[in-house]
Length: 266
Image 1 (cartoon, one colour):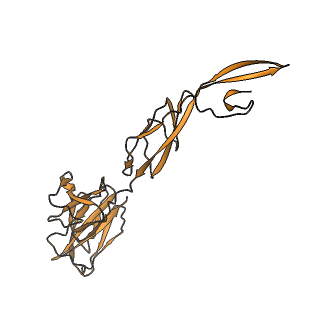
Image 2: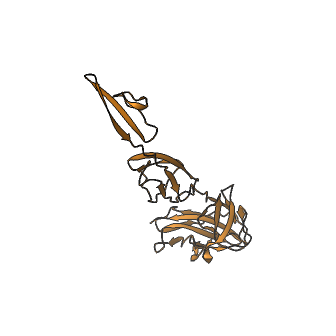
Image 3: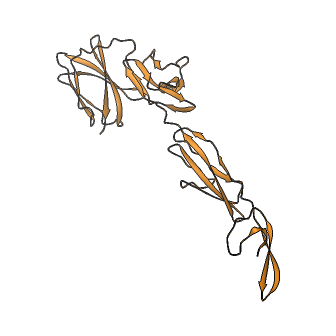
């Protein structure tokens, strides 16, 4: 028989370190022996994160505490930074003196910042509805434009502009948008066609009833790269020495002005 209510041969869970005494009987004779069972406390494991709320694309480092070795769920390595793509809960198991315990932490990942911009003439509008805005001048090393902090922006001069979006502390910058319509009246009645679009390097112009047209081509930074007069007899402009990408055409026929975007993919 065993002390402490222990049944011989039956497993049990000791509450703490205890000395157990067993009394054995054989041929009417008895004797006793003792055994100390040491119960180590479970480690108090902690799950630590450099940040529990992230912007899309940001990294986080998870480290365990309160033990000597750690293993994480989700393929995470203790103390090694990684970039989570979605909100998730990570569990760490810590081991100390052969005993293990676990805990978890949740890492929240915000949605990517909406950096979309729509353009109608010289009016630029951010697609983000829940943000703070700061418009910048792409042609001046993304210099801040004082007072340009609304969702809409109408540049006072032709150029290339972008908006810095701050959504709940997550910040990103839109692409640059070329504005060529300030100071002129856009006319959609110019009977002129530009083809092909996308272009492999050569643009052709069909002038319709117009004898000639002035063509100005701007790159994505708002820089004028070509200015040329075209006629029905000389209706071709070559862009073979330009980089692939988006370009803006400013077409002037008399007092009428029209803009058109083209894509170069040679």
